Length: 111
Image (cartoon, rainbow, N blue to C red; front, side, top):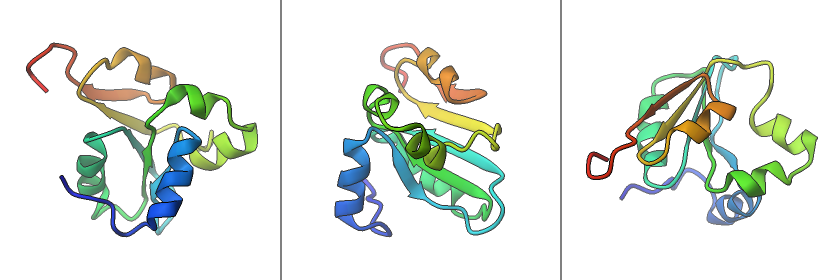
């Protein structure tokens, strides 16, 4: 499993404790946000690698993320960027709260 070694492990830990964090920040104007969790994060990072306007958000816990301040949530998933894609190898329906498109598999054994 590939790791996000571009990011300090303590920053990853602190972000995970908040339910979501920016795993890859865009280097140009924000164009798209890719949201993923668990093993899907490595694939989201690869997909966004050559996209300077792409942000990757790791969201290991929706419930914890929802408990954060509005300012924190806006800093991770700015409302100005509506072009959002979630990657999920489990239950994809939950992700439509945060993303307009979901790439996922809802059947056991296909992920």
